[in-house]
Each structure stands twice: as structure tokens, then as C-alpha cells.
Image 1 (cartoon, rainbow, N blue to C red):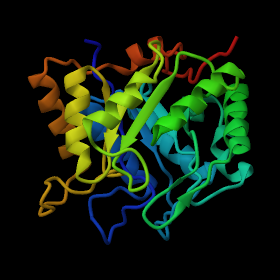
Image 2: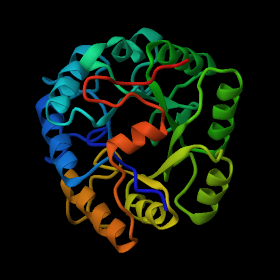
Image 3: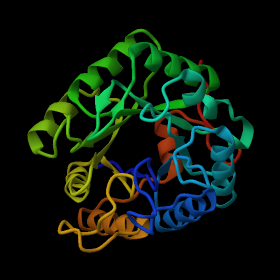
Length: 288
């Protein structure tokens, strides 16, 4: 089996301090949680930015720059992916703002959700033209797309983007299960989605809410990577009696990985497999 990709998602756009005191909101809190996760053992981190005074999600590159600089002070090789989400922002200038960061502040990856979708109360709008424009911008900047997939049709759209040369292999997919309007946390949905992904791709699997532990466990058992963190689930137990910390969620993944004889993939190996720059001052990918 390949080594285990751990994609750490500390914050997201939904958890608030009122929901859980453990969610990192300010840049310093995110930096500290990523630092602890790095010391425990992760491959990459997928970060969201919040306005420090209000805790509301923000697209501003200055906030991302502060987080990236702080993370790279302790973890200069860690793969950093920034969110380009369309849940709160749906103009290209805002969603692509972080992609203009350069040098030591340049993100390695940017999230690219491959279709519009409905969450419980809001829609995330991702028109084909927006997806293509974000992909084109990332390609021009040498930033690798992190392909976010909530249903099987999104995988096919990813193949279309490859065919039209908006994105290029090797590809990295996050498969997210358990959203109310998308693929659910069961073996059939998982198998159908995995069956449609090309062989030269890396894959991590996530479960939303109570589905996180189940889908992380399944991913580890079948040789795939995991996406884990408070972005997707703030509870440690299915009964929702104990609020989790990010460190506890990562430590649990390590326990399951050890039981399955899975070693953790270091950032350097992920960078090699994805044909990315080596880190330590050189980030992203050179597109030829």
C-alpha cells in the first residue's frame, strides 16, 4: 500500500467559537494548530481564512499571507492548499485573490470544486466558466488544483478539464461524503466514485459530521488518503457528547493507520508524486 496522505483541514467556513472553542479562527490560532499537526505527522493542510475581528470567512490574500508565512516558519516543506470556495464569494477577483501571492507566500495548491452544489442551507456556486477560469489562473501561476468532489458527475467534469488542458495530471482528489445533497457515506457510493478516477491520481477521502471517522477508517483500510479536521466535524464521538480538538482527530487517524500498517506520507513524497516543487523556499509546480 502507498503511504497515507493526511490532509489536515483545521477551520473551514462553518465552525464558530460559539459552536466549539477548539476551532482555530485567527491566523495565529490556525498557525498553532497546523504546527501541532505537523509535529504529529501530516502531509498537507487545506486552510481557510477568517476576518480576525468578526470570525467571518474572508477571501483577502493578506490574511492568507499571514497564515502561510507563520506555517512555513515551522514547516517549510509542508504542502499548503488555500480555499477558493464559492460558498460565500462568487466573483473571480475575490476567489482568485490568494493566487496572486508569490515567493515564500505562494500556496502550493488551491481548492477547485468541480460543480455547483447545495449544502444544508446555502448553495456553493461553481459555474463551468468559473471552474475553468480558476483552473487557468492556477496553471498560469504554477499552483496545483486540489480537486474537490462531492458526487460522481464532478469526476467526469474533471476528466473534461484534463481533455481541454485546463488541468494536467498527476491529479489529487478529495472525495467528500455525507453532504445532504451529494454522495453519502456508504460503500456503494464510495466504490462508484473511486471506480471513475484515473489510475495515476492520488485520492483522499472525507466524511462530513459523524461520517468523518467512518470514511477515514475506510480510506485507511483500502489504501487511500484521508482528509481530517474540524472543518468537517467538530465532535469526537458519534453521540456528540465530546467536542474534538484538531490534534485529537489527527492522533486518532494515526492510531488507525498504525493498526492497518500504514505509514504517513511525508510532504516530500507527496510533492514528488505530484511533480511539485520541493518546498523549503520553492512552491507549487512548474508547468511545461
